[in-house]
Length: 444
Ligand SMILES: [Zn+2]
Image 1 (cartoon, helix red, strand yellow):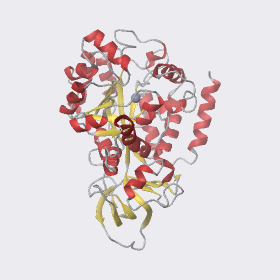
Image 2: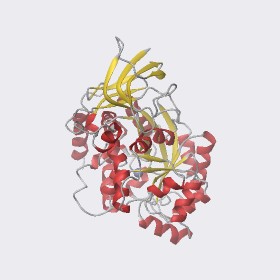
Image 3: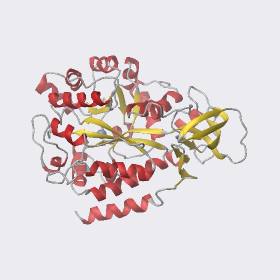
Image 4: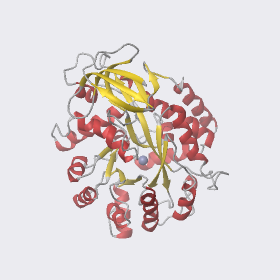
């Protein structure tokens, strides 16, 4: 039994609790006692301790574009051109090294579980590697080495646009058809720290009948199913022109929507699509720092939540890796769009970053500090230059004032991964990332 004593902890709901003793057995929370002074031999956690944060939408290699594409102007499509150039140069070994550094950055930011929306499957010319899942294994191995749990959202990607063949680097993304995708993904297995989920890239990249096959595959395995939805107006226009329906309507007809499914972005939706997603209880994963970086727009997230969609959060392109920033952006973007404050309470924003994200990734018991949950603990400094001198509402301080850099300690499944702001398993993630970027640059 390992014992952690949190100075303050968020146990759910609108308030926090002081003096919380958490006993851990076999990686799981065995007991939670409140109002306790720390007994001897207890690991002390200063500040406010949260459950582990879930980053429900990640493309690890997009981190390579940080600071490279952002000042250049253009839009989503010019950014995608730069992203494809980076994708063309990744080998399984480099993919692993990039992901290891990115996942270490996530752990340092309090992320204990990542949903990796993975479509970089094959060699640059589209031929499979000797092990057709070698790139997926590189990601799962990286998450394990960085101390994170991972849901590998293995992505079906068949067309380079509606009715268009895959071209250039897109050939790396494609399996022959949905049956070929299912056969390859069928060889992947869950482990203690990893789950296999499915993804339909988008209506741009997967025809409806193929999306239906992927959805059926996910249902048969009770695996999470994710998809990009209406990130850009052009996607809606092309979809309506071809099918006479919006992307949400097409995916509803293919039985992709539902309580086990997660729509990523859901930015450009009409009110009928909002109702459609809400009625199906599809989770919506917002990625506000990416959506603002790519000039995507502000989605109808408050309306989606009202309609019945649980909300989760992801850092997607990793322009920023800071789930606290994503959580506050949900509220702050809504304020800009509606001209009103107070759309979500801080604990609701934290629920999106914790329990809802874990549920969307197929870890329904995680993201809460309760008996029987995985012992994932994230401590946030309340005495840093950013968080000192704030008011008595500690949840408001963490959501509106704290940054990833204020995360001091991270425990994943009872194992210490970050202590005093240092990663215990990946000693120098910045240096490791710099080295692999230099290699990729040299290959240009
Ligand atoms: Zn994405």
